[in-house]
Length: 112
Picture 1 (tube, rainbow, N blue to C red):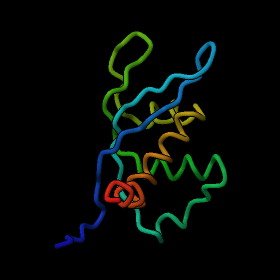
Picture 2 (cartoon, helix red, strand yellow):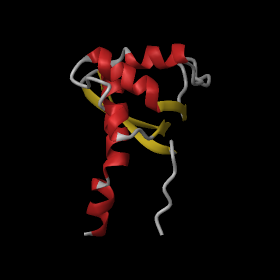
Picture 3 (cartoon, helix red, strand yellow):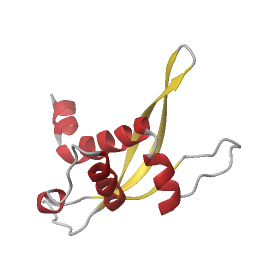
């Protein structure tokens, strides 16, 4: 049975490809998202940086597994979210994680 939950929240892994000397390195943390309806998503222009940032600000509700450069916990706040979204490679990773989790495509592929 499928239970319909209004405003569901879920956790998903976020894989960030970090630029480093000589190439790239992948790092992962966990984000907590609020799933939006199709009509809610229509309010955002994901083709623009501003629209993407507004969308992510509405769907990201927390995270785990992030530390600052001193190794101290990098707690969720709107200010810290703004710092992360200013990094293009993190913004892209958040978008990919959200849509991978909500599209059903990955789950369908696992079943094949």
